[in-house]
Image (tube, rainbow, N blue to C red; front, side, top):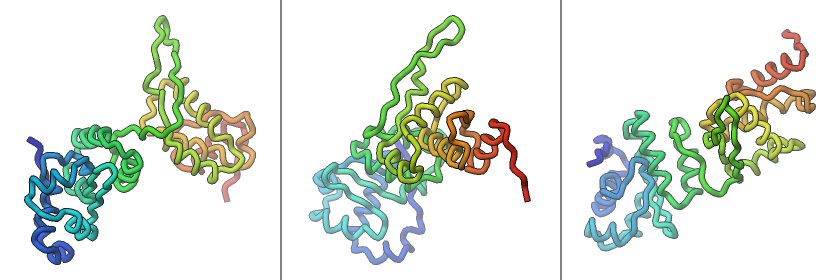
Length: 242
């Protein structure tokens, strides 16, 4: 049976103290019911809440919980208790359970918002479905041909569109393919495709570097300046420090 952690100082929180008793019951229920997953983002119907809590009116009580960061998405019947994950264990095993729970959420836009909200945690989740797919390739490794499924990554379309404005004049689709090629050639596992692409684009942004002769930039160069210095060295140029 899953264990859930609730901060005992909740009872001293001003917003919680202001709630009427039905809303307090609902808030604790949303943390502790058997439908709640490791993520705190889960599907549940209002009829289920009403049946299990005995509360006669749910919508009004949910509205009262907004100051406590509870979000209800009616079309997909998805509940998000935003502070839930903050008060749980952050072990790799638990974060893996969080990632698996997110796979069950049908509202992928909400999943994206969830990942952004909890971006300080390393949740091992592959970004959701409205994406630009990269076709699976076959890599020759000695005598074997193996399907490189680990590199068949996807990058969120909304994220790609935002990059077009951030890096004008750069062929984002082509750069993404080049980025993937570098990772495949170096037999590296890409765990965070969006971060990898962003770092790649930062590396080619500087004037004189994106000239078609650059060396592919590995993800380990995590800042634009590190990427720039790497590319300058690769092209035989130097830069004076003052």
